[in-house]
Length: 395
Image 1: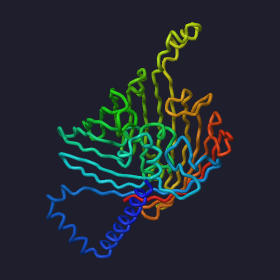
Image 2 (image 1 turned 180 degrees about the horizontal axis):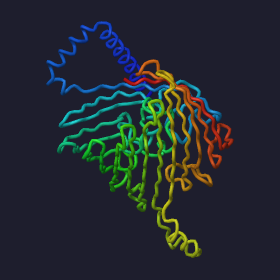
Image 3 (image 1 turned 60 degrees about the horizontal axis):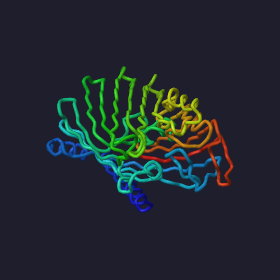
Image 4 (image 1 turned 135 degrees about the vertical axis):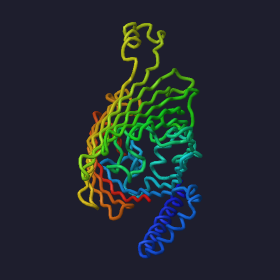
């Protein structure tokens, strides 16, 4: 894995420097740029087949108030390595959009991949996305493969988000999914999608059942977008009782002014509890009645409020307040009385010298209902303070 990270890291730097040289040459010689444009116009048929190549690099340094075991932060996938400079996410992505077909293929590496893809087979871990689609009708697409998740408005690419770290709801919902989808744009401002998936963030299937997902995205106005997404699927292995998961996500994203952007999100999920055997409860009839008649589903929910202020062309300010509550430990195990239940606040300052490059410093405060954090000496804490330094670019 370290060799893969090093190769992608140096390749990203090379492509970034190359792009800057090309960009600089075109600006210094307008006539050359004009000639290049004319050549592209003369070869329009070739242009239809030329894909877009994107390269991204996200590096960081994390300092926590808690000295975790193995220098790794638990419960999250972003900026997990502490007290050392690390690559969170290095990405090379190739994509193409045309009137009749489109596709995207991306490979990636980094500590985010190590954490988030830990349960996937090794041969699949380098795949960021790999899908292809065909236009069945005008504005109606059929796509198959590995996609970024249809849930939520935050990206695995930190460069594209208001804050460096992801919100708690983003960390505890899928980043990726595998299967097929139908995407329909009946109107310019409306998109409807239907998914058939292997499961909740699954590359490789774990049972014989398939999950379904939906997405409704509506552009309310020029500056505001509202999206509602769902997921329904059995998350238990074949040898266990069915534990169907029902999940809903809604978010609103837009801006009040050109200098003030906002992102509001709310998640709520339910999962069927395994049925309790009457044999195991023969001596405690009241307990048995309680288990089969009440609380048949476990529930979790979370929210985030994010603001992004454009102080000027190169300085930005991000703020976030959030909460996440999973008392039955459906999506995250802590083995405590209140499960994974906590509130958090974040603030980040972004310096953007050019549009492809971003320097960030973020402060984050987590306050849990229970002492879910354990340090090297096995001391327990219910609060964590973080400072993260970040450099990233995306071209």
